[in-house]
Image (tube, rainbow, N blue to C red; front, side, top):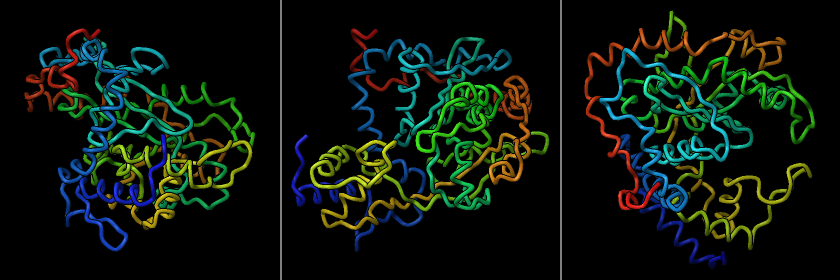
Length: 383
């Protein structure tokens, strides 16, 4: 792609930010005072629509087939539900389904960074999808997490390997109407997930240091999509809170440049900007999207403060063992894992939330999977 001129790109960026609902003033962007979740959804809407249009050529022809994996409300028998974790493998229908469902999120879902583990949660009673989650490498600097753990710089460098971040996590309708987002959050903590981590990454050398770490997944973190979250709140069983709020992000990111303008930013960076110097194992090129955006903003005369989108997201963490935090601080040799099985967590969730919700809120029965369709015009001739 040919790089646009500095003036053209600057005007395009500012026009894009204003179209999303931001006020641009003195090198910073602001949202309306006391924005609601609907306001935040509108800010993300352009980026989400851009992701859907990018995915359309690859996924639209499979939509009818993938929709058959989504339940109608009358296909869910609360008394018969049996959830199970299904690993997502590359180049399979499950991978297509994972990507397709992520396009329905109200914020643009990334593909994760570095290491990745992806799971579907299926209902064995009818073969339909309950939800999904994806784990990837965590960001290196996250103040709320680091202060909560009690990390110094050297210990974090050594032990961050044992943390993964949920870049997407949630339930799909009609199961989402039965609070099954909380179920998915619980199932991400199971022995099944820890075993998958151990089998995939336990014997691999790290790219930079060349070390082989102990195969322990000790902590999962995530950030809420739209400010305060109800999904992770009060996930408490037998008095123990499995997901804990540890603080909030500072509002920095790049999603607000993901609505089509990023491709022009990237082209400009390739033409005019120099990547940050790296050690040889990292390879050449820019380190990440954030580096690209900050370098280009600075070069075209815009403040790098425009990378602060102003949406503070709550940060949650789920220790997977009694000594997880002590292990991450280097104080003990093992996290003393909880040994949480899928069945045990399902039974606890079912008795605590699921059945009572199913009896009280019957709207889930009205859900029609056709309402989940993204590309109605593609129905004819689809697989």
